[in-house]
Length: 465
Image 1 (cartoon, rainbow, N blue to C red):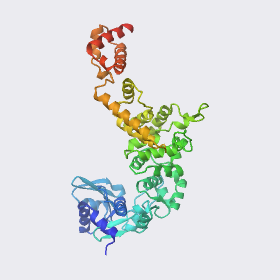
Image 2: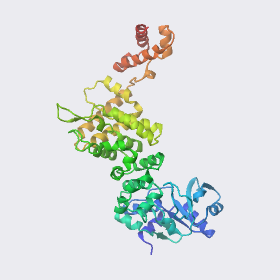
Image 3: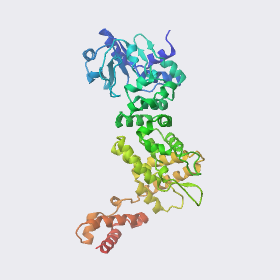
Image 4: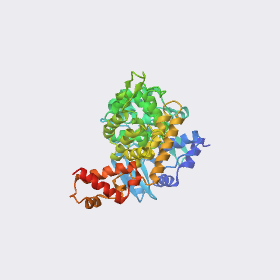
């Protein structure tokens, strides 16, 4: 009689995947659904949730790559050297990989050679963690679990397959994947697996920055990414990847916070919605505090003057080193630079407009979210501070809706009109005058009228002659 796990798997595997398995069976070969898709179905059942819809159903087969290619009309030879081909069905791609056995990994990343095998268990034995080393046989209706992945899911444990140090030596990224799975799967590191991480850091240091960046971004989708970054801190991964963050550990805050900078930082990350770039900004938003901390003789409390500027200067090179895109890096640096918002109701409308201009309207939605997360992560009552952010957002929105001029493009005159009105040869003076006009219009929007601007522009140009 099928178990509850087997019934869940049988009802979850989509028809195109079943069709691939049956087609391979028709030519005398076997195929299994393997890896994360099996794990996630079983995990969802334990959480009482529906398994997430997914297209990335991976299959393992005892067919050689050339046999798979002959069996299907639309196939991409994705990685023939490693036994992987991609079968296309209705615009969806399914990876089918020939069973492989253990080999050596001289560079801590790629196998020195690929050895195809016919034994499913031998293939599963080379995988990283027991919860990823399970396979589902759709035709036989049998869950294959030779290393206790189901029991580890029940115990909420993340345990390496076999000898942890050997698994980590094969691919240095696996120690970072361990940290990610602690967060995304909400599992606890099994003791021997945890103990093997730090001795495996030599292999981890060979991992490309791009792969590390990708793991960070995947981690940010977890309900609590802090779990992963705490593993990275505790086991040396941050020291190898982003030592700048370690200065926050134990760095005492001022009396407005209940926690140190590191604990507050992780709480801020968790308080943000699961948008990866925003959460990276939360991770780095106070990275400048340790370098700016001073004890005030007047208040006998710590100050962090200019920490947002210092933090932006630290964040930029760190993100470049980890190969974040220019757009991602620009957004994170801007969010770090502007995250300290000291708004109160005494701000004039002009002050709000200047703040919006300085920040940029495109950044505002993410910035409001980050600032709310920041104040909620202080470990103290944050209702009053959140209310101030709400008030600033509403006030800025009202001023923008009223047509506030924030840049040269918003002026009622342009550079060519100004040149004609002044009667001078174009030059740097044009930009200088236009920028001054913007400042005056921000102060008083009523000045954004063509005739008045041309008159004022002539006066400014004359004073600069």
